[in-house]
Image 1 (tube, rainbow over the protein chains, first blue to last red):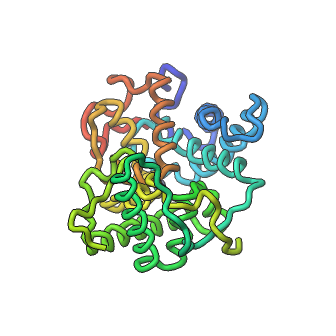
Image 2: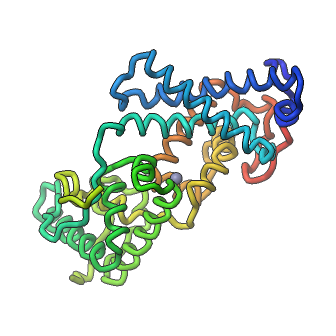
Length: 223
Length: 102
Ligand SMILES: [Zn+2]
């Protein structure tokens, strides 16, 4: 036991029947509730009902589900981090997923393709920046039509343009967060390759560029 | 779930374009991100300059995983459990196994 009353060897304590296991399970549940409550509280602004009572209900349900997920994997814990840190991540993942689900439970998720008539939306004030941004938006739209499949376009638009949470979309499509992220990753690789082939030089710092600034340039003026 | 015409939000704003052309290489899956999350956050708390390129790129490109990593970091910070000498791994690379804490 540590000074906080936690088992010195969590895996053994959780796996060995007896009073020690009962106590370890009780302590683990407390950890899961703490982390789940922390997560739900962080995201409470998106909940239709963010009263303390509603937050507590979601957190407790998430903690229970996360504990089940953790116990199924407890023998994979390798001690690379503290056990408590390792345990917390299960509760945080479950609670965040649950909050997003509640946030979207009464909302339609609509998949749509890129419209040819979609005018690029630009917000730059100077005519020069306006033209640059319009050119870029047209190039990206063109690359989306030529380099992506309809499925890739719909997923990319849903996740990256319409900001539908990845867990919510995965749930509605009957797939997983991992599968959708793989689709998005492939979309990004294809778009970057296509744009580069058309002479658009991707800024090396594109991944950290402020979102209100152009991150691509086309000095050669390639259409 | 039928395809529908784009909503008013479906336009290619500069922010959306930034998301679409983000460089998320080297590849890291959400599952692997979850696997590394605990060691990554502990490493960040020991050394705010800690870098794991694949993790960093994944977190820039995956809002859900990013939120969860930030949340775990905030939780550990609030608990003050990241202090050196608090039963956990010694300072050093998070990619290396620390002393067993179990
Ligand atoms: Zn992810």
